[in-house]
Image (cartoon, rainbow, N blue to C red; front, side):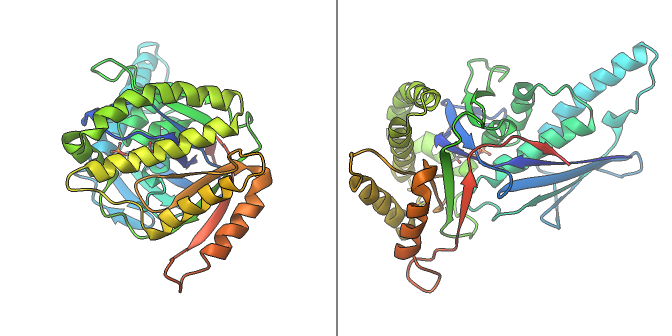
Length: 355
Ligand code: DP6
């Protein structure tokens, strides 16, 4: 028996992934780019043990056992990591070296998020990244992160970006087998230490339409989506340039525009998908007001929203205190019309950890 525990961080996209060209292999219709958040506050922690005596693969999520018999995505991750391990075992056997045949053992997986699961806070990204990274450690696989990201991608698209800290692009690739659809690091977590993220939990309820279902409905019904696919390549280039130059003005505007366009294609989906609520829109207005009040007219903060109402605000460190005060003032608490649960101040960037 062998047991390994690892943690993986959440990533929040600033150029969104929305739409698959292959739903089985999880190949996207556009490139995307995200910032990995610090694991100190938001992470998935996964323990996996492999033992000959186990009767089958099992999963406990946040303390409760889940039925994984029909969970194709998890089985993809098991299959892919076991295949690489099996090749290592075969090679060792051929060379007459002793090696434990871990690829043949069933595994027990225990995973916990220290934040609301499936509330649009990228829990599938950190969860599946933690699964693949922990399997890789358990099986002693070579740790080429882009290679592992291709496996994590088959668990949940956005998970491939959580294999790296800092600023991470998911290159959509061109190949039909997905061999070139992988994550690459644009800049490490040390690159832009002045940039911070604030996670505003507007609601921790489970979202109504899952990303997986929502994005395929968009592909099938939204004429605006074709327009988005023309816009994204230019945005990716501009975003990479802004990050490398630590140009918050461009970074912030691109981030807000891309979030808005993503929610516009959701609204253009038929029937429409509503992820934002009144509090989300209130926060958007507040950030635009705040930016308008800037003495030199420069952007001081930028919001982005995934498939849920929770806001993530990116801003230079020096503005964060003011932003938190503003939000606390205008969205005071749970008994007002604006249900405002919590805020997390999160330092940018962090890589995976092994415990
Ligand atoms: C809005 O990665 O959860 O957060 O690949 O079907 O598992 P699947 O979808 P998922 O979608 C995330 C969508 C998003 C944008 C993003 O993270 O880029």
